[in-house]
Structure formats: structure tokens, C-alpha cells
Length: 312
Image (tube, rainbow, N blue to C red; front, top):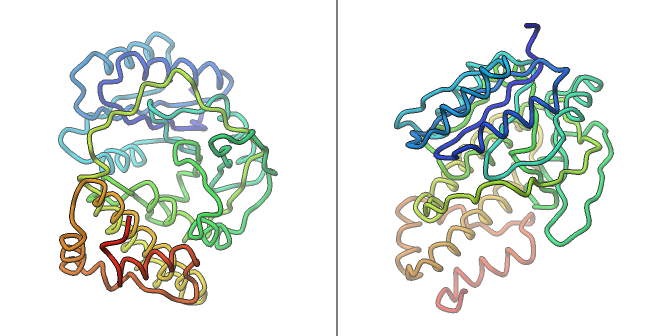
């Protein structure tokens, strides 16, 4: 076997035959490329791990299964990164897959010498559109992400492994909600050679339904904590670019905190209880209105601050 071009990291729990199907599909798409498959088993109780191993062995592929035990998905993903041998890595989730983009991404990465490759998926209800394969200023992309003007899916990105290791970029292991978002911000903060691939992403239709375990509601505070860690990184790494720092503190942090307000209100918590909890955790001090705050968010913040009983 030759040098591994791509490591495919697949977190999985009780996904039956879907992981073996992923391995079969990707290995067929990249039949001329040396690929390894790292399956991260999150304490499955079905035979999905055995089916995945059988698929790897039957087709004489590189691959392994990592038993994550009782650890978090972030701990498992970090282990996957360090165990991988590929020049590039990507993450594939059984519940959210895209078709036939790996070869285009690899070619784009090699042609451009990219550290980070992504494509913009079409918004729901809109026609697919292509984006130019061209270098992107990571600082400008950070700004667009903070303003929610651009979106790309964590399950359709490709990264140079050496870049992650050199810059000590990893997932926050104490966060199970918001971890992917924080990871992408930290990737961009280190100024990677970033390329938007000329690829139209198309969702796979036979993905298993995402399991609703209430994690969004139980762990929603963890997204705030993850973004606060990113904010500290921004203040350290962007001392020469106050625009990004100001955007994050005036737009991103308050918008994330208000999204948690929406989740908690939906779950029946009173505004008094939420305000009290936010004050205890120190989140309230980040509900600032600045010159970087969008008009819509400004309205929400003012309503929450002065008329919280009318906020919906």
C-alpha cells in the first residue's frame, strides 16, 4: 500500500449497515486513491462495527475501529485525527452525507496546496449553485461566518492533517454541542490556505435519520462555552485585527446566547429563570450592543433586556 492521501473519520453509534455502506461508496468513488477509514464507535450495541470491519477486510482496505468507551465524541474525533495517517482528513457522519465530492476536493487541495477545502451547500428551497474554485481570505471568511452570510457543512470539509497538528487544533473535549462550529473557527484563526471548491454538494437520500436524544436542549449551554473559548483565542490571535474581535463580541456571542434563550423558552423555562441562570454563569455580560451588532439582533437584545415577558 502507498502513501495515504485521505483519512475518512466516521463517528457512529448503532447505525446498522450504514457505516459499511459509507465505506463501500467512498472506496468505489476513490478507487485510484489510497484511503483509510477510521470508524469511531460510540458504544454501539448492534453489529454495525462488525459489518464495518468486514467491509474493510473484504475489500482489502486500510482502516480500523476505535472504541471511544464513555468518552465524548470530541475526544473520539481528536483520537481519530491523531491516529490517522492521511495527508488530508475529512469527517463523515452517517446521518448527514453528501455524494461524490471527495475526488473534486482532493484535486482542488492538491492543485492549490490548500490546508482547508469547503464548498457552499445550497440553501433549503433554493436551486443548487456552484462556487468558484479559488483561494479565500480566512479573515474575510471568518467575518462572513460571524455575520451568518455564508454557511458550509462540517460534514463536507477537507483539512490537511499536518496543518491541524502543527497548529495544535483540536476539538474541545468538554463540549458535545457547538464543538464542530468552534473547531472551524479555530481552523480559520490560524490562517490556513483556504479554497472554496467548484463543487455542487448533493445530499445522500438514504441517510439514517439523525437520532433525537435531546442533546441540543440538555447541552445548549455548551455552545456558549465553546464560543467563549473561541473568543479568547480570537483576542490572543487577532490583536492586529480588531474588526474580527469586535464582530465576535458584538454579533456572534450575543446571537449564540440569544439562540440558547430561544431553546430554553421553547422548553418551558421562564424568562426569570433564564436571566438568573445567565447572570450566575456570567453570560449576561456578553449580551452587548455595539456598532457591529445587526439591527435584527439589536432589536432582540433590547426586547430581552427591557421587555423580556414579551420576548418570543
